Image (cartoon, rainbow, N blue to C red; front, side):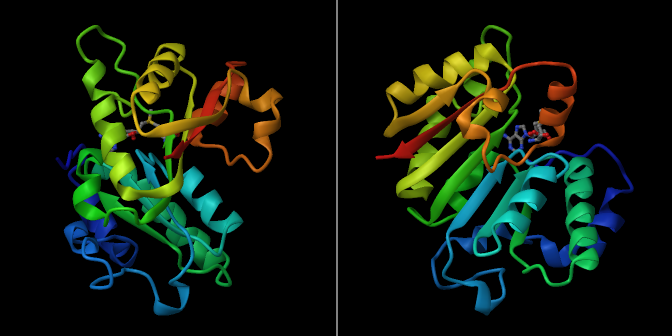
Length: 223
Ligand SMILES: C[S@@+](CC[C@H](N)C(=O)[O-])C[C@H]1O[C@@H](n2cnc3c(N)ncnc32)[C@H](O)[C@@H]1O
């Protein structure tokens, strides 16, 4: 489902069309279609779901030029900021590889977009916690979502989760127990932990740190 908030998003999104996967369903069918320049093929492929305004994906793409990145966001007027941020980054630093593509859509379609076993990493950063009773199936770490991630991750591929929300974090740890994942590490305070090395901050993360909120984080491996 593509959600719209602002009417004027379309024209600005169109200016960044080269960064968008126009018809993501085409990604499916390995070898048939790739939105990346040929010379970049062959590296690990990572995916962020719910990328918001794009700080994380732009930071990751710069830190790991050998990887390819996809970023999914379902709200046009939000992904617009991510698209424009990435376009500005490439303009300011033309030596960076063109290794990020964005998809406007809902994370529940991930297994329709990506071939089975094609991804090396999935990142969920500050996903909506859906705290109300009865809405837990919408959480992006609900078992049905974990099954989808298991389909598209290669064996040994990793799921990385960061959240300020303790309820979502506890829920995620429980859901992982019955999913085809092995917990690699977890922390209730990412920024005081050894796992913060190489951490790329997101917009929400920066806000929470400023407020003194501890960040929960984990990594799990696809079995
Ligand atoms: C709380 S914000 C966090 C944004 C960013 N990851 C960060 O850490 O700053 C969650 C984002 O995920 C997006 N989102 C939530 N559910 C989604 C879904 N099922 N598919 C795609 N995007 C989703 C929301 O639109 C929102 O932009």
